[in-house]
Amino acid sequence: MLHLADDVALRPVPAHAGAPARSAVLRDGAETGAEVSGAVLEGAVAWNGCRVLFTTDGVPAEDFLHVTFLDERGRVCDRVEIGAPYTTGSFGDLELLPPDRVAFTFAAGDRWVVRLFDRPRLRLPLFGTPPGARRGWRWRRRFALRRVASPEGPRREGA
Image (cartoon, rainbow, N blue to C red; front, top):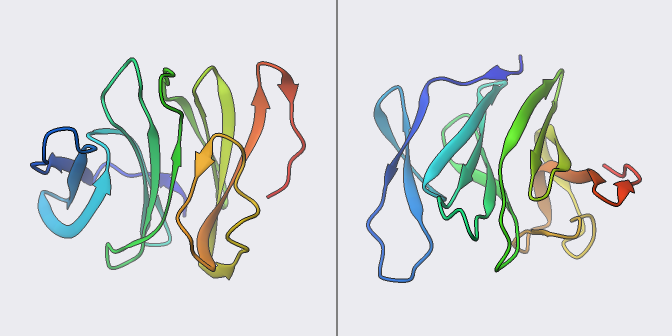
């Protein structure tokens, strides 16, 4: 069942000067052992025992959005970063699209959709990530990301 999660919080993790913000994930006030990029929890979604966190760095002039998938045990299984240096970003319009999709806006009003997978799916590392988003090198993914609209007009859906 897809719903907003109110049992998740973040605790800042000390970092070296100039290092990106990181936070420890708390669930029901207890440490989970997971760490995510970002300092501000913009939203959290629960789905089939898993959590999807939307975090930002808290730097208004150059904010990045981090989408992180945590499995049933609270482990980080997949992640993506949206944004670019020297650009502003603002997270908003979080919308649940049952049974397995979450939509939101970020950076110049771009509309994004995350489609959640109940188990890891094979994905080609060099393909399938929309412009403006960055993912690490992995063969298996727990979610797909697509950009569905931008100021230039609608884009083709591909996920």
